[in-house]
Image (cartoon, rainbow, N blue to C red):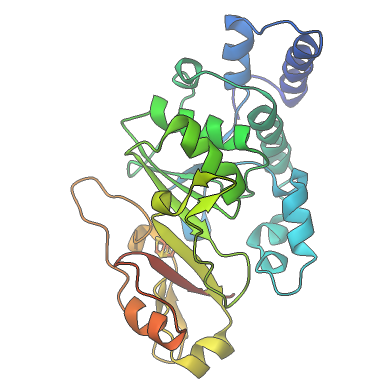
Length: 279
Ligand code: SF4
């Protein structure tokens, strides 16, 4: 949870926000302390053996709006079922404010301690970006930790496209474009607001209802399922299709061509479409 108490972290944020509001620049100590306030989470369940850098979806107005949309996957977000993790969500609120408020140079992100068991770190496990600055800070974290591989999930291309335009896409970052709607593969646009986007997308991740999967005979390649769609295993560490593994090729999305054919979609290449069953 870092070297500062929660109250100390908000005090540091308040002090730095006040300086910016007065038109003052942040100094070395400000940036160092802000980075020291960031929480890196130990993950469990599906993401056992992973660490994640994330924000709190409850602070994100886009997440709130999508959760009111019945066709969206967001009302089914697993994070809503984790309401009892109060201290985690408080720490992730600190992250959200820092990532969306402060333009922190890459050299300061290098001091953020990021543990890893398998060399992979998840970006966004409990929320999504709130702005292009949020995505810029993530990309700088990735650049500052070249010994690790990061995989970012997002529904907010409007943040990531300008961030990639500004910062480029480091080799140690995989970007997963997460479909907003249930049962609809969200093909990435070539450009968003004039910024290139599709070329930066490594995977498109889409959640399907079991009834649709059964009706169309979809191959669910996120987790392991029996032919009747009963779950066998659902841990990323046993799959790693979305992640880069040092010394290993990514696993190809077996069955994806059949999925694209039955959904009437164009094949844009192997290892691109991930289908998950809604829990
Ligand atoms: S496809 Fe595999 S690595 Fe990707 S989210 Fe699903 S279980 Fe995890």
